[in-house]
Length: 194
Picture 1 (tube, rainbow, N blue to C red):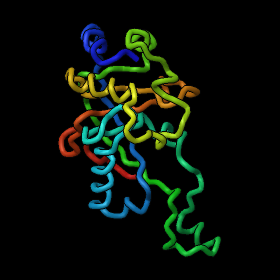
Picture 2: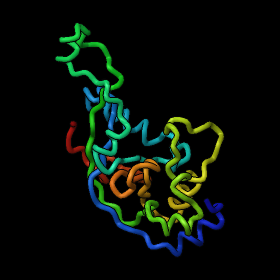
Picture 3: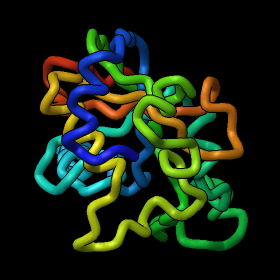
Picture 4: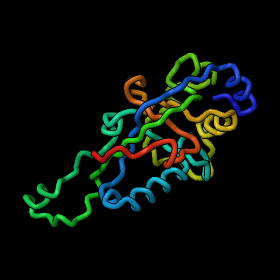
């Protein structure tokens, strides 16, 4: 990845895209029981340090489809009836169960990092953008090149990024939309739980 001082002029010469559609987030079922818990969990995620943002840079990562999230979700989730049939208390928390939230959004200036030509211009590749390592392994006090890229794009007025999620999955089918400065009241609305 190019250093910051070289990213600025390169990004000035790259055409941005617009992107409108639906995005999905999964949250643990125990957070999905009350609207306040859902909002608290979403706010926590928006401020969390992740691959394309630093601490205290509000950002949300939305999967382009439920299938994208299901590629990463644990399948060991039991319904209340299954718990009863297996003589497990229905009140037992099952941390592997998730609810899906659907949002809609309309972004006018997005950097699409799935594009190989853009990757080449930025001096990066799929291995750097979507490393085959657990997403929670970001080390403290380490600045990742992708965080630097997100920071520069944010400063240049981009509303977000479209990023591949895995080196082995087709980036045109499975990707995330990383939205900077999300405003849950105006940019998206909650459509439904799954």
